[in-house]
Amino acid sequence: MQVGTLRDFLFGSLRRQFLVPLVSLLLLISLTVTFSAQRYAVRSARIATESRLRDLLELCKLERFPLTESVLGQIGEFADCKLQIVSNVEVTDKLFDVMGEDLNRYDGFAIELPPSQSVFETTSTRRFLLALTSPRDRLERAAQAFWLPMATGILSTLAVGIAALWIANRMVRRLELLERQVQRIAQGDYSHGVDQQGDSRTGPRDASSKDSIASLTRTINAMSQQLDKAQGEIAKAERARLINVLASGMAHQLRNSLAGALLLLQTMLKRLANPPDEIPFAIQQIQLAEESIRRLLTISRPGRHVEDQPMSIAEIHRQLECYIQSIVSHHQLQWRIRCDSVDPTIDLGRIVPAGSSVVSSLLNLAMNAIEAHLETSKGAEASSGEISGIVECVYRFDPKDEMHHWILRDDGPGPDPAIASQMFDPFVTGKREGVGLGLPTASMLAKQLGGDLQWRRSNGWTEFEWTISARSASKISPPQE
Image (cartoon, rainbow, N blue to C red):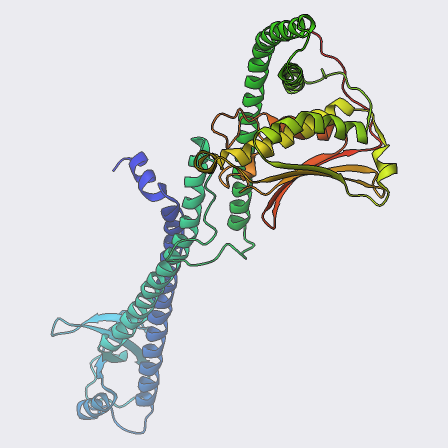
């Protein structure tokens, strides 16, 4: 096996990187302990055998009885060894290996006998008493000292390896979840976060965990959410850029057409002695369309605004009434506008610098309420010829925060739930022929004037609350063509 292949096999995955060093270390420790124990056991067994034979020979060395062959045989049988008188030995006072006459190996221990010791045969001036014993017991102890630690080490390594594999699998599975999420993020999918619950084998864990992997998981989830949010902001920016392009192109075309139609109606109004009532109404609608174009330019050209005219609250309501009354009468809707204040006289006399912007925004919201009501009532209109519905505008002044509040409300079914959370985004509409620029325009104007636009559904009514600050001056200036 090549070095690169071996390295890939040993360290190719996180599990192997975790297990291989751990198991190798455990095996190394087991072998070290085993050989050390065996060496100690062999040494201890040799010392014990040597001590036993020395004590036996020292006992026989005493001159209390003759060392005859029968006496040596009885003593040797009792001590489970062989005793012999020899004239020559390899070493004395030390255990050594001896090859017996039966070609078996024995542990031998010899001491020198004094010259006065009684023996049954004397052929030499030097005599030695030799004890021979089988090395079986010593070898068995050495074998036990080897296999017991070895088996214990192998079993311990196996148990620790299984536990380590289980722990490694838990950790690696969590890291694999992170890896898959990072891969999705790299592919541009930010909608799925890392499962904090783990999988079915590990169960709930990261929800309350404070370890590094859990912290990394939460960081990746937060990064994914931020990237998803950034992607949405980029999409909004692209839509805003598209609005700019469309609005700039549409403004010139619509203005030219409306200018021609307005000129024609004004000429007819001057020539006719008794002009019909519809002509002033048509002129008013054309002027309203021109105002909508100017508001569209407000969105498409940041920093460029439409000129405003200061108006009182009463004048704002009068103009709104003038624009709305003919429309609601035509569609047979109930329309009312009222001031919900403690002293209406004072509040209706308050001057709003951005009067024309207020009229445009309130008219926009009122037309949305009327059109939404009519959109859901076309079937009833076709069948009965009548439509019953209420659209109203309620004004109040809040002296605490010095804010003007207008609430445009209707008793229709309300906006489509599918777009309820995106109604203030450009080009989002629930109308069949809607463009989706009315509410974004009104919301932007409210924020420019220090207020806001909010909506709610309450007791069968759809309410849009448009607020501006009484302290804010008009921030609207004429656009440059």
